[in-house]
Image (cartoon, rainbow, N blue to C red; front, side, top):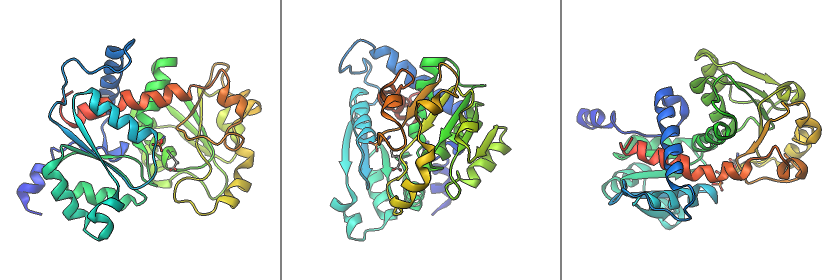
Length: 317
Ligand code: CP
Ligand code: NVA
């Protein structure tokens, strides 16, 4: 790569992992999301009156299944006045061996911004290295930062500023957990994570967050994690790409979020889940459908928070 290409790349607003984002940028993205949401309250399919992304095109490359991520980006980009093309690697020359580097350089000539969901974190990094337009992480096995934008927006809508609050994660120390850990450092909330032995959250993420001032407690005891927490969060026991489902179901059984566990959280604790959920596994029906649950607000906020992200990535903040 030439020096001028490197210099030019420094200005690109990729969104690959929260730890590569500043607290100020994260707050800007969240505020933009809240603002565009407020503008459309009460209208069903509102177009942003100023069409700030008119003439811009988003490429959505989905190498794995998705409901929320795909639809929220498609709808969000459209509402902001832009266009979207959805791509599956199996329909692209990528599926026949064209390199990510070449794909990135070609797509950068057509598109203004790219979202990639991939089963290989290295593919996301490679795409961002060669792309001359912003690249957004649409989920990898390592992290899911866009999910946390929606989670924070949802928490703050229901309970006010997240800074200084305590959240609990129960279950698998997976990609969503990693991004939540990074958010704890950027936004100043405490996080307790209860995971079975062998499924602990990323050591690197915990270390990084602690070095950046976050209080992160890891334990194998769900009660310890949940005690007095302002929100209890879980996710599937078997993520995309996991091949040891039987073992996981056995080991995760004591980590189900149910009424008995929620009783140990704060009286008005929120229950959150990125979805899709598996009722009777990581969460009981009573909790999922009960008064603590804000999972569908959380799903809706994927749309609003990602509109904030699209605006930020394209310099419309
Ligand atoms: N939570 C989430 O990312 O959902 P999808 O897999 O449906 O996109
Ligand atoms: N941890 C889950 C999240 C799905 C949105 C997975 O990676 O499959």
